[in-house]
Image (tube, rainbow, N blue to C red; front, side):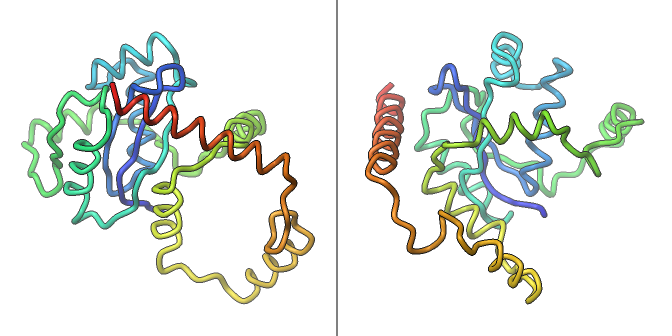
Length: 207
């Protein structure tokens, strides 16, 4: 499913280094970034140099906001104006949407993509799935991420009665289910994580 909106690429080692981007298909944009970085052909020299030095595993990708494609430019500019940007070489939101390419440009793109199969039908290996799961475990999503995921991904989507029944059965006895009370130790741990997160964000914004 396509997700249109604003995304962020952030360094784990140097969290003050942030790249903000937008796209009508965020997943495709992220894969496009990775493919160009791996081939050392990314148009953003700052991002490419950082990738070459610290590696792909240092870059964390996240969705900041889900929105309609007509609002991409306005929302992207909002994040340019409010976030401590590092990687972006241009802080003026602009989009090639609706722009006509020359015949020469089309031929160059066609030649470069010849034989490229893309990611359609690609499946992660078991090892890759474990790495992804380990990385995501315990990570606290921002309020913006949660809102965009809720509004963007599930917008207009309805589960079938059979799917809802299976989800209900699977949720029975789930510790995360409604009514479950977390331990004081867990609450304290989550509180400390949130405090550290906002402490880091505050230090970044002051730079």
